[in-house]
Amino acid sequence: MNSPDAEFEAVIGLEIHVQLSTETKMFCGCRLSFGDPPNTHTCPICLGHPGVLPVPNRRAIEYALLIAAALGCEVAPSSIFHRKNYFYPDNPKAYQISQFDVPIASGGNLAGVRIHRAHLEEDAAKMIHVGTSGRIQGSDASLVDFNRAGTPLVEIVTEPDLTSGAQVREWGQLLRATVRQLGVSDVNMEEGSLRCDANVSIRPKGSDQLGTKTEMKNMNSFRFLERGIEAEIERQTGILRNGGQVVQETLHFDPATGELHPLRSKEEAHDYRYMPEPDLVPVAPDSGMLEAAAAALPELPEAREARYRDELGIQEGAARLMSVETAWAEFFEGMLESEPEIEPKVAANWLTGELAAELRRQDDISLGSSPVTPANLARLVGMVQAKRVSNASAKDVLVKMVSEGADPEQVVVGEGLEQISDSGELESIVDAVIEANPGPAGEVLGGNEKAIGALVGAVMKEAGGRVDGGEVNRLLRERLTAD
Ligand code: ADP
Ligand code: ZN
Ligand code: MG
Image (cartoon, rainbow, N blue to C red; front, side):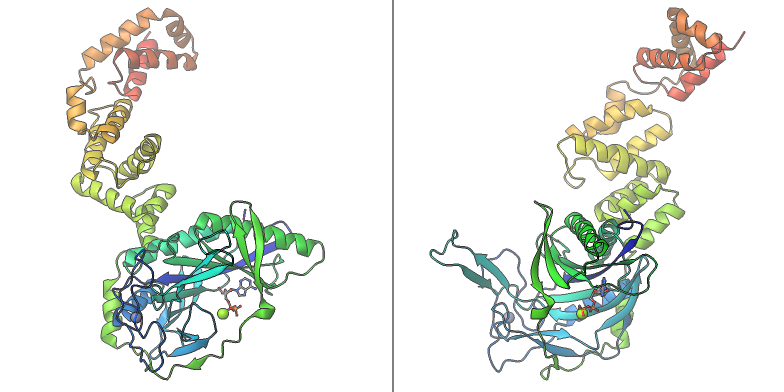
């Protein structure tokens, strides 16, 4: 669905928080951790004791520069940190150190979606809300885990260039793959190392004005975000069609019920009283740091997809999958490395088509935990390409490769699956089948082309699948049009 209906179009902008996978926090030496016992990675700095001094994490700045380079952003020669003031138990300083009017990066583009800015900041502590039915009796309570407080974040803000939930999912997956490829974050939405807020508004089609937006917070998967956005587009379209007005508010989408609930409205919005952080000097990356970031850029998913499609002739769906899912790309590259003569397009089809389907069929095994290696799959594809085994036999071999980790060469030889290459042997099977099936043979002779299917099937069966369907077809036609 590209637009809500004929009258209105959706406008969507994203704010994405990326937790950087540095060793230590943004402004202190505490280790980053996920899943450790609460409040075991804290110090006076990240607990906000008075009088302490923050020191920026050089690695976090390098990671931000990598993200900036990957998104084609301009890096500010000198950006500054601000204090964003708010009072909440997840934030003992009562301000978050963030960047405000001069972010470290601005003005990029990823796959046609413009990046407004990307800036550095620190994460807040994690709140765990315990209801009356929870561990603390008699009253609601909130617990705070400061392990997360001070984790380095890069917030990426797009221009409102997206137009549907499906497009947000696809683009979000591309962004996630891009950041993952940089090695600067785990980008795990369920664990919160990638968090995506979507701003959604509706306007009359063709208008260049922006409508009032709502904000959807922190969905833990792009699929849910897609569904939430579609629901919100529908809700706003309904309001406008009935002559109403959209109220600016923050919403939560419940994937279980498909319902949208308001979290807070903009009237209660904070005045953050941003002020320059006096304890930190500006971030001024030197040319060496900028060059290092540019030089460290790996091939990114967008470029990889284009190369697969345009240079290797791989179909769009397979090229997309392999560029977004790094494990698949690595598997594919491994195949080409071990058997350079196989055709990339055929290799990609076996990987993303046949193997993917077989993994799903056999208990949804993931590529990483399957016993099939790139070399083994490449060997199998090589045998198909050399016409040593038929497509049909190769699929049977693949089943064993997935279930038993079998070696394709051994299965093919051990089970006698090599194609009948002796043309005399194949011809005699063809002749025998024609003789045993005078009905269909007569029909083909009489001009009914379709009847040949039954004969091809019979030959394949007789030969135990060890023949090439095209070759059988050709031989049958030759026989049945001979006189
Ligand atoms: P705010 O001041 O509410 O934070 P910003 O202008 O900073 O809003 O934009 C935040 C995000 O919302 C950006 O991703 C931007 O592209 C997006 N956005 C802004 N206005 C709209 C709108 N009318 N409809 C959809 N998205 C919008
Ligand atoms: Zn600390
Ligand atoms: Mg804003």
